Image 1 (cartoon, one colour):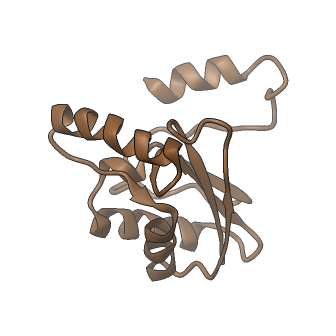
Image 2: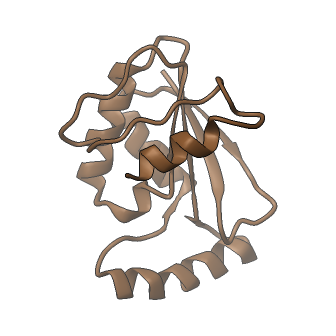
Amino acid sequence: PVADRARERFSSGTLAGRIECHGGSFFSDPLPLGYDTMSLVRVCFDHEDHAVVRLMTGIRKALPADGQLVIGEPMAGNSSGEKLSTAYFAFYFLAMGSGRCRSAQQIIQLAEKAGFTRFEQRKCRTPMLVNVVVARP
């Protein structure tokens, strides 16, 4: 249902014909092939390390040699925004019963276990809400 709504929304406007949405379980369904970029937005922080490595490994196998994985989520760290993010989301995770903010370096370490070798960190204007790590094979 979520993928259907996203597909409908993306069918018009500037993203029409440039983005595709695929529904299903990223743990039990095959990942789509033939895309140069896959993204995980606010996904990793909901799962334990072993599940994140499993997901990233599947993505690595599905991406071409020149592909990339874009990971965007609140990240732990030493900046004031990152500290605020960690504190804020601690309450969110408590309510949800699981999850945690990881630092960019921790996310990179998980991606390395999944077979990615090159990384770029991109800071965002709202680090409380999101920072970005780009992982490439």
